[in-house]
Amino acid sequence: MGVTPLLHCGMGRGMDARTNPVADAATNRSPIPMAEFVALIASIMALTALGIDSMLPALPAIGDQLGVSEPNHRQYVITAFMFGFSFGQLVHGPLADRFGRKPVIGIALAVYVATNGVAALSQSFELLLVARAASGMAVAAGRVVTVALVRDCFSGRAMARVMSLAFMTFMVVPVLAPAWGQVMVMIFGSWRLIFGGIAIIAVLVLCWFLIRMPETLAPEAGKRHGLRDIWEGYRIMFRDRWAVGYTLAATAITGGFYAFIGSIQQVVYDVFHRPDLLTAVFASVAALMSLGAFMNSRLVMRFGMRFLSHAALLAICFFAALHLIVILAGRETLFLFIVLQAPMMAAMGLANSNFSAMAMENMGAIAGRASSLQGFIATFGAAILGAVIGQAFDGSTLPLFIGFTALGFSALAIVFVTERGRLFHRN
Image (cartoon, rainbow, N blue to C red; front, side, top):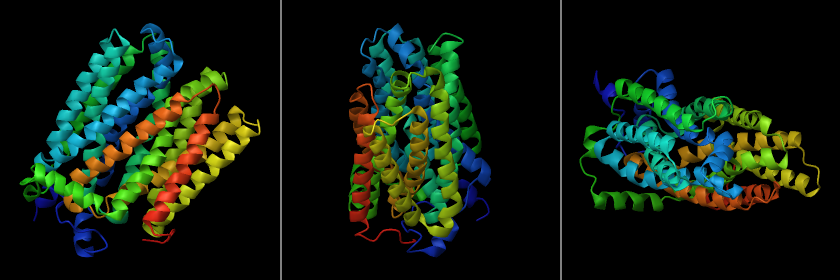
């Protein structure tokens, strides 16, 4: 018993907090000091954000240097990454259930370093997109396996709290990444340095992870995970109403977020004609998302995941619809854009932190496979939704907020059906 908690956190019980409070109490503990655990998880997750957000100021320079004539096609630098990210999750989850969390994350981050090196040296837009897709596939482990790793050690509200703290910590990256990308392009004159910097940071995170994080998968849990076991895990997930419902709700909300990521550079440059404010606009929105995650980490243990996420979902619908009305009335300014967009994005962060935890609530025995499949569905679906909305950009913000409003109310309808009309109860 003395060393077991350091070696793994007991994943594989197959019980959630509602059915086995004794097991839950034994599970809710960190294998390393809690602050370091959250910081490390956040750092791994942040590599994904770094691979996306630092690109935003560089898109015009990439397009100019690699001969991309259609402005909307520059968004493919983001879209290729997200498609690779979505498909990569189908691979990492089953591998993490079979071989353990540590080797899968370790190898994936090493590949992430290499693919960013290829992106930095790309001489054609096509090779850059291939490198971006491969990079997204590699870093997908940073999403799917870390969720399984957290589920190994925590469940229920405690898992939601840990995920919120990690989300709050890694949101520092979206605040700083665009500024870093802008410095690389405007001061040093090379978007290629962005990819080199990502590779260096990934090496540092990889070393930290390999040195400090123990394996959290219980030894007996990884003994049998052939193809039949993978399909059985998928079958279990698809039969769970909460897993399916909250995965689909997260898909809709994340689709709006990806649409924002893909469009924000053009919105600030072409709609409001303030390219100098891209970093400030993005930072203000990201800071509010971080605040939303912090509030969730403080309130979820008191009010529960469902109450908070349902309230956040209503806030998303309200702000999206209000912003759409402002646009249709011809009253939108950059100031109003930020004032209405920031709280909506904060609500997105709060909702998704809880949606992920609730989708995994009954998945303790198949955490890697469930996280893999849920991540693929949510990311692939969101990438398609975000790309459709992003490619509809017509020089105004109207397509973006039609998309936000439609996706917000779609998510609300999905949650209503999932909960059979019983919203806001405190679980």
